[in-house]
Length: 177
Image (cartoon, rainbow, N blue to C red; front, side, top):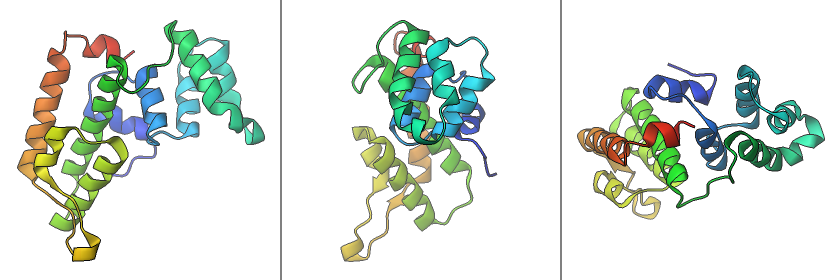
C-alpha cells in the first residue's frame, strides 16, 4: 500500500495519536515534510498563534519554518523542545522506529530488498545496540548486500513496544503529546 502522507503510517501502526513530540522528531529525522506538518497543524483546530504562523509559511518564508516549529512546540507544550537523550525524544524516536519497521515487515520484499530497507531505517533513525543482532550491514567493497532476519525484526519490535509501554507507563502521555 502506498501512503501519500507519512502521518498515515503512524496512525496505521500505532494506536497513539500523533502529537508535537512525534512531529518534532519526525521532522528532525527527515521523515516528515514541512507540508505534512503544515497539514497536520491545519487539521487541528486548537493551536496557538505560533503554530498558525508555521502552518501558513510559503516560499522564501519557509526558511523560518524550523524556528516557527520550535516556537509552536513551546507554545503548545509549555516547555522547551526535547532534544536527543530526553525521555520524550527517545519515546517519539522509538515510536517512529517501530512504525517504519512494521511497515517494512508488511511489504513483500526479496531478502536483499528487506535488508536494504532495514539498513536504511538504521541509517536514518539511528540504531540501538539490540538492533545490531538482526542486521548485517552492506559492504559494497566486498559485494555483500545488507541482510536482516525477519523473525528477529518482529521480535525486536515486540520487545521495543513492551519496553516503551512499561517505561513508567508514560509512553502514551509523553510520546503522544
